[in-house]
Image 1 (cartoon, rainbow, N blue to C red):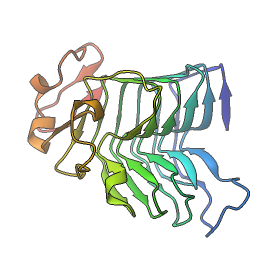
Image 2: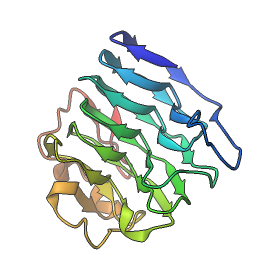
Image 3: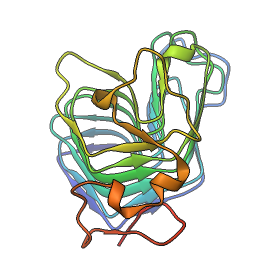
Length: 220
């Protein structure tokens, strides 16, 4: 569904969302998310999703498309994200958000599997395409993409209007590092043991995050 300026909190969704067909000529299976398909403003907080999300563009484990200053905070997804082998060219897929056009993502994570087979489509562990702000977030997701240099452990592509991406990380033991995407602009890749070490998460608030020994950070 669509969230226009509303507040969603303490919510969760599980199960299967989206299309499993082989084509989408009318673009009817875009903006697919495990919790919300399209967010225009408003806030999503303390929420999560699981299951499987399938679509053709702007597909995310939690939210498909986040725009108009929409804020996603203290939320996560463990959903599997896929295009069902039917995505359009240059489509965007992410473990948490498919496309973050001009929104804010803060204190979130995705532990997901993202599989995209469309030519030149973008696949990322957290956000497929980012034009907004991402801070204090991480991904521990596995990736499969048709075009190798359009996948990245955290964010696959930044638009010209992209805001800052700060203190955000991905597990590079699970996800590949695209040759053209290396650098702090696209987040910082850590090995799995480093992802389990609290001291590597610079500036993260211990009142929001817990750091259990031998595990990824979790939200309190």
